[in-house]
Length: 167
Image 1 (cartoon, rainbow, N blue to C red):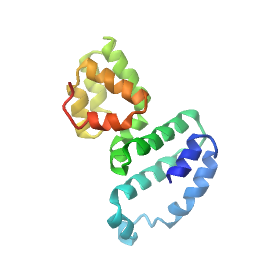
Image 2: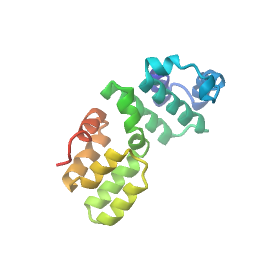
Image 3: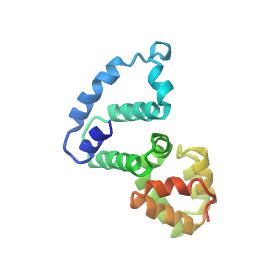
Image 4: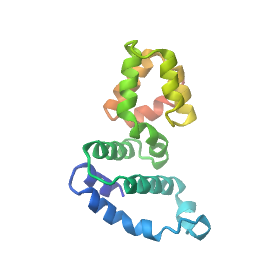
């Protein structure tokens, strides 16, 4: 799957080819958990969770677009930097929303968006609770470092940042 995503991110294949390659997995998925093969989930639940999340994310995308390629590129880079399906799955809401989050952080740090408005954005963002808590508690400097790490695709550092209280 990673090689397929890497090819798409590099524009070596189109969204149509990506859909075509993932179609067998979708067709074989019974959509009823009681009919699904539990072996892959038992052997590597984090890999399966991320795989299916990505399959449905890609299936929902109808057309090639630069923003979607950039999102897929971030996912591939997260897998490469963290070496973890679990961490990449945890970061997925951030990866999908990265551009907007960085803009909101910049505007908040510049005083354009108030703390109350920043907290309101976080309340509606869909991030995991511990990431929301980190963002709510972070100083302007910590938010700036996070934004820089996201922009530089340093997802291993991003994940590590969320594991300790913000400075």
